[in-house]
Image 1 (spheres, rainbow, N blue to C red):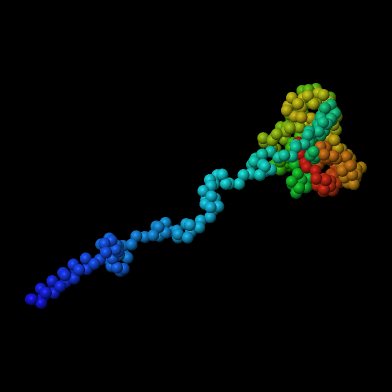
Image 2 (image 1 turned 180 degrees about the horizontal axis):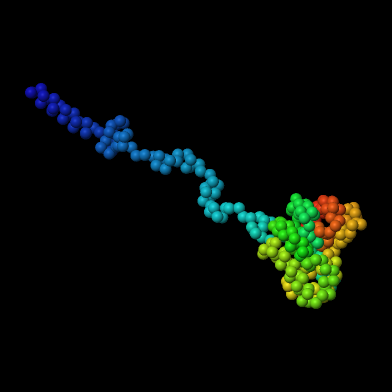
Length: 301
């Protein structure tokens, strides 16, 4: 017991001596833990660990990159070039001017398309022998034409009238039975003839529109033109006539006459219902090929 008390006294004496010798304000020796120093498990996370970005990346960021990222997408989107056109804007190519001779036919009848296109017109049908051949040639090339129909033939071959309409061609009244002197008849007689023809056409193709009247032989009179106009039909003449209806006209002559006389704007007279249509059909193949080479476009009027 005495030794124990002596040991305690010696320890207290040593502590008092140490406190007297330690300079005030010096830090404790390295490795000595204090009440305010956290352990390694309590160390706070670094800023880099908080936002996922390393200090080097944050410090070395490219100002140009930061500027781009801060820009408004609406402001940085590419603007249309001055030469670009808004969707749906009209073409800058000028439209073709109507030809001044559109109504230069007899008594002011129409004989030109009014633009740079040409129009093929076929008279005296429908014919069960030739009209289907003409329709085939036009369909193969995507061409629309005008068919000037005889009322009696429309009544006899209604399926051909329906075919013409179904394929998008234009209709024209060419009288009931190709009466050359129709224009000399009374207004009532002319009207009855044209109405009978229209009735036969619309019976074959219900709802079809008949926009034109062509007088047989082109023997126009003011009376016939006036009656047709009262019935809502424009009088249609032609600019090119190769006389393909004449049995004496050869295929070569038909071709040459059409190609020599045809210019942009021309309305061309041909026949799918006369007696010489083998030569006409042969010439038509060559005519269409040459028109394609010339770059002609077509109007169904």
